[in-house]
Image (cartoon, protein in one colour):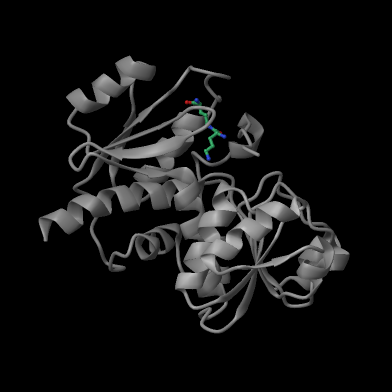
Length: 271
Ligand code: 2YH
């Protein structure tokens, strides 16, 4: 299932009213930029100011989401890259981004959100960036994942990437999905499928929730750390009181990782 963002979900992102950096620092010891640099395998002091991005509004399918391009633009600017929303939309906007000499072009339709590196002719995808960012956030919040049991809830695009990243981080990964067969498919990546979604959640304290699933507080184990990209995002009061940390934002972590990973292709080529 692909969740479409809505204007109310991303309200506050352009002005950083959600104060994600403070919340992330508390939970993980890192800022969005810190998480994104680690996710892109770049050193924490990497200077990104020489990179420029264009964000192209896309009208196809269900059309423009009010505030989406402005939010992505603000997220990229907060990484210290130069960024602007193109005046034109769609193909015209893309050509304006290329003409402006942008290193990275960010654009999303209903099915795909990409950061395209114009120099290296490579793109990074939002499912990849979201899974990587939330896996890195979980790792930092947990003080490392080597040998630890982690549950991925949801075996969609983000969950599938998350399983692979968490395994690479040395975690012992289980996966659950209301469609059990989807979880079973991820044995291919070394994840253990669990049929009973509720029991799987009760039995784990380290969770990556990549499902459009609201976890009721009674299922959440005391002291849980929940890295939670899935939308709709809601945790009840009981869940919030039991969890040690719940990491979530509507757009920023995934988009920041995409942009930094995209820049990293050029940095790696320069070396
Ligand atoms: O929200 C979405 C899709 N669900 C992409 C999901 C990728 N994992 N797309 C945003 C659409 C933005 C719109 N076309 C605009 O304002 O440019």
